[in-house]
Length: 227
Image (cartoon, rainbow, N blue to C red):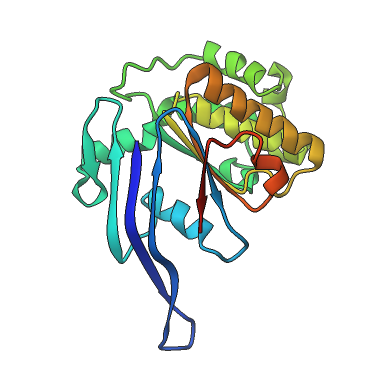
């Protein structure tokens, strides 16, 4: 569903004129219904790849195509305004810093309700309703009472699962996660991995995640991309 072909990306180093090559001819495919592991050490370019795939960062050379739910295969360089809108609902992102997804002055319940305002017109036949929140909270092992708390009142693992809940409300086709368990203890990391594995197997959700934690990812990954 997502194809990357011969991708290059350079950065100009600060206070210097020379360029640093981060991506050199990277190619891979994210298959529909698969868990793809983007594997590499710190500084290998994993976060750069994810920013590019999320259309937040331009690449220098290469080609990226995305297959929409309606079957259209569109090159990133040819996206229309409506394609961008649909892409934002079909593809959701989770980072290693879930606190960045929530307003610290708002309860988590109010933050989740923002999703309904942002994605009210998905044009995908996806129905958003408040019942969905409780269903997905249960899916990520959280409870209704968590909605009345503020972000700082949750543990790191609980907040990461709340960020996952927020992403799942729009029923994405592809989840992209950047080091989702690097800040978590062993128990919470394993819980996140189990939830992702369940989403993949029960809902056929495609998942792309980056991580350098070999022992936490290798048990669930279908494909491995080295960078």
